[in-house]
Length: 82
Image (cartoon, rainbow, N blue to C red; front, side, top):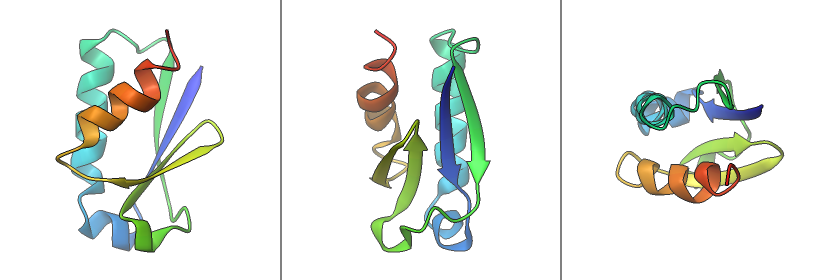
């Protein structure tokens, strides 16, 4: 199972991490990935200056925003599940 952690620390929260979580939840449901992907909130991932950070497996993806969340999901989640 692919684990995705989205930072909900104070800096990322202010930058929209809860909207990004909602976007990822919707994309997981839309693509019927509930059995393949586990989405988790995480406290600080230590990359506060790089925008909202997510961790997929052992890889960090910085600068995730509300406007690019779908693109990041396609690039970093869907590509791994091919």
